[in-house]
Image 1: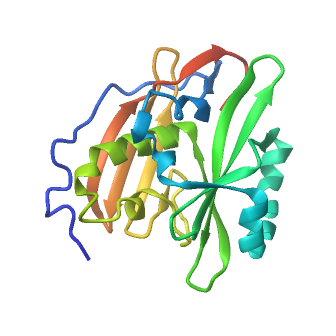
Image 2: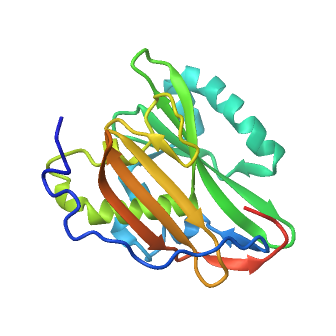
Length: 221
């Protein structure tokens, strides 16, 4: 196993911004449209995944369909709907992300999530967790900061959920360790703290000020 800490994996990476307080009168508009525009350009983390239609995806992976249908039930009960007839896929095809969004009559589209699924060593598909727009934003920044190591390790093995038992409500296990993501909302600014570990060693940590905007609303997110 590569010891990233010993190889100065955290070179020139520090904390950014100030901690903010949660404000329940606001709704964060963290839609993926923000991540596909010029704000991040080629650094957009979703551009590293292939995009395929539902029909092609489920034709190749028929067992994934049942897993997906079970996973979306609770999301649909709270008002989320599929964002389109497509999903994002890793190069090996063992990791899939399906976008859903929440829409309200008063504010329009206010939230996006990516539902993550992984295929384990037995060939079984598992529902892993959801990634919010804030999570994707933080992972995008982390990938950009750590890109100098892209020729030494597969950074996606450190950044995205793996089909392993998940215990941390604020994060997830990866192929190489774990990721912790905590977002604090406020009217002036929102911050997400990301911590990436290999085993028990912290190899990256940063507090990221979000570029998302807010609208006044009585809903909580």
